Length: 231
Image (cartoon, rainbow, N blue to C red; front, top):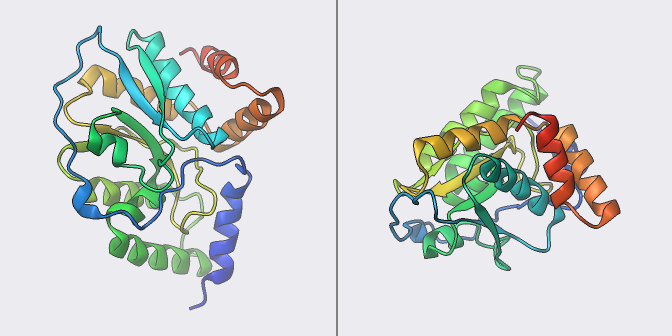
């Protein structure tokens, strides 16, 4: 069954985020996914969020998680990582950052490219046959579950967002998801991340990116957005 047209259509859904969220590549050595251990951060310690400075969309979504954490007493710092587009797990492996925001399908292709390819083929065929919808919660969950099952024990995730990003990635669902180092985040911290994931939709993220691009800033825009959501 031909799936090329469906794949292009699916990628077009996230291509509106043209300023770019982090798109993970499939060229990272999976043997590097064991990060240096770190204990749960004390409340007074900073949490570091790795951000690619060249991608506005990645800055915006990372600022969202940073703001929500800060509003709940967990001060986070944005740390620019120039190589993040090529190796999204490197800051976690090296211990320079505690949190990286990525997309489920793209990250799965990094940690488990074989499984990602199999799921992508099945998903695109199901969409083309009309057996599932491109916004299917089932496939969001299947892709997310596959990612969780492929991560090493020292990496974990909070809940995925319904918002999607990563234009140009594979044809799988690309729901925004925070990846963090165990055991750096406490249960309360993870609940904060879950709230942030649920606070934004794809269209809202698109609007924030467009406004940030027009105004040349994102921090205040994100703060206003979080406040409007009660965060």
